[in-house]
Structure formats: structure tokens, C-alpha cells
Length: 247
Ligand SMILES: Nc1ncnc2c1ncn2[C@@H]1O[C@H](COP(=O)(O)OP(=O)(O)OP(=O)(O)O)[C@@H](O)[C@H]1O
Ligand SMILES: [Mg+2]
Image (cartoon, rainbow, N blue to C red; front, top):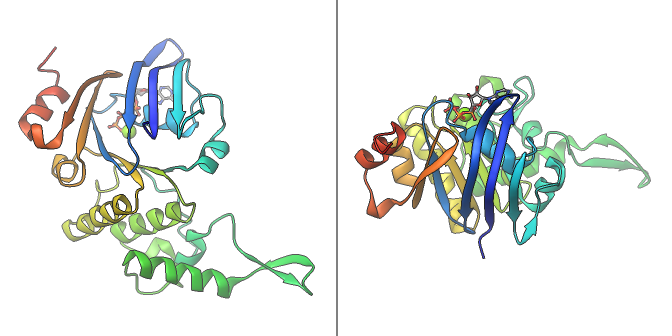
């Protein structure tokens, strides 16, 4: 059984149809590369998986359940996480707070009233999390906005992992990163795979896709036009599908 199965997913914005009946599967622990030209519909397709967009037609099944009509919160509960292109981190807040943003552990006053946020606990758990992932930041106390792009990306991944996801969708995680930072993000994906977490990696950087992904799906004008095993294809072939050389 596939972890994720999309069948016939269609999505329009007004009169413009962006997804034309997309079929797609992802297995548990699989790292799938999703590529395609600007405007091909990649982000729209991913938001249809997380529930940010409701689809016009078709079905989304996850972990054996039809989640087509579940809202984003319910899908997250089931183990679907997405890291958006803009990361959605709070740049003024420190690293630890960002990792637990919105669900900070609280201290109970006199063991009764859940009152103030337990900052010490947040800091400790955040540090443990980063150590476990092998992520190095100068300190969990510095504002996220002061970190490099690559460090911010790893913080966003660490945050996603605290939800214990089964599937993590990453939209262009390496686009703005230096070479060494790219390596640490790809290493994290590999670590996640080793723990059985599936990843969908959207990227225009085919080097990264070929390094991280066992399978590559090409989306063109809202259709899946190629589904290729990495070991049975090469960059020239993938590019030819992206640019539409196959019609
Ligand atoms: N909320 C929206 N309302 C109207 N049109 C939209 C909306 N979101 C996306 N579109 C349109 O849908 C098409 C696909 O956009 P999408 O963002 O999914 O492409 P993409 O493959 O992620 O591209 P990129 O690689 O540039 O990120 C585009 O033509 C875009 O203008
Ligand atoms: Mg996009």
C-alpha cells in the first residue's frame, strides 16, 4: 500500500485549470523529486495534499484513509507536513521558540492553572532536537532572522519533525543556499528517509534532485508527464520532459 495516493486531482483558479487530473503515489520512506517549469502546478499540487487547497475533482488518500475532505489541521494530525518556500518562521523570535512555535509547553502554576510558557523546557528540547539532527547553530537563543538561509531551512525542518510526520513536503529548500548548506539539507533528508519518513522534494536544481531522490516525477502544465527511476534516467532526459520535448 502506498503512503500517499493521488488520483485524478483537478484544480482550477477561476477559469484557469492548473491541475488536469494528476495521479501520483509516494511510498513510506521514499524520497520523491517533483520537478517542472515555473507555473507547472507543483506548489498547487502540494497544497492539495496538505489541504490548503481543496480539490475540484479527484482523491487524496494518505496512510490508507481518504483525506480529500479533511482540513489542513486534520491532515497534519495524520502526519503530513509541508515546509513552504518562504519558510514561515518568526524571524524576530529565537531558534528554540521557532521550533515550538504555536504549541509551547506551559508550566502549571501550583500544578493547576496552565499559565506561562516554560522557556527553559523549550530551550532544552530545542537543543536536544538539533543535536539529534546534527544541526549546528551558534545558539538556540539567537533570533532566527540572524541565521543564514541554510540554517533557517534546517530550523524549519527541525520544526516540521517535531510533529512526528510520515510525509514531509519541501518546496525549493535549497534554492537560495550555499553549497555546504545544500549538503546539510540533503543530509537531513537522508536521515529522515533512514527513519522511514517520506519526502517530496520540489526543486529546480536537478543536481540536488538526483542526489536525494530515488524517483523523479515531472509535472508539465498540470499533468504528470514522466515518472522516472533515478537509476534509469539522467539529467538530459529529465530536462527534455521539463521543457516539453516529448510533446
Ligand atoms: N491562488 C492562486 N490563484 C490564482 N492562480 C494561481 C494561484 N496559485 C497558483 N496559481 C496559478 O497556477 C499556476 C501554477 O502555479 P504553481 O505555483 O502551482 O506553479 P509551480 O509549479 O509551483 O511554479 P514555480 O516553480 O514557479 O514555483 C500558475 O499559472 C499560477 O499563476
Ligand atoms: Mg512553486
